[in-house]
Image (cartoon, rainbow, N blue to C red; front, top):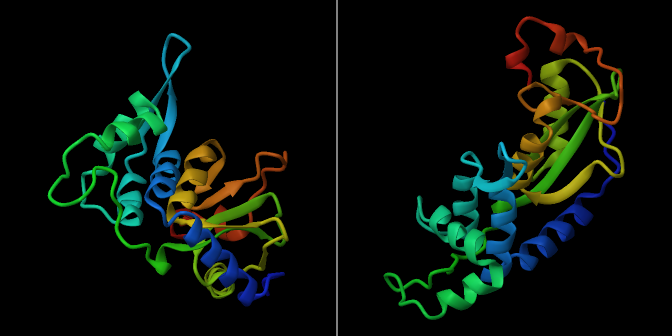
Length: 204
């Protein structure tokens, strides 16, 4: 059975505080810009900030804007800098009644927790996921994979689905399958039975 050293009341307070912190338009755009873009190495040793195409639609939902509008605005931030882009936007006409960097209402369902669930028998193997009901989600994982998992006191971070994608992108070199990864700080690379199976892609 999973080890989950957290109280649901504390998690709810964390989620509410996080949601309030990114409710203002400027804070939400900064958060989404950091999560929906990444630095791509160029041949000359330099790096170019480009969109993470899987994360952009998620950030558009978090921002509460129409589909396809995020990257053009993030493009302005990328080229002008954050404060300069917002100052420039104040001089622009209103677009269909919405400010250039306007946002919609913050939705409670956007915010939950990123969990780093380790396999009890193979602690170097972990699942990185997002949920608003982490304890229930861990029970589902255990039921499907027929193994015990646990979340350490430092294995839970408040955030959104965009954070999950950010971790998946940055840990891609250590991916086993889907949301399962090797811990890059541990050298062991053996696999539990449910991941060693030929149907790895079906792992929860």
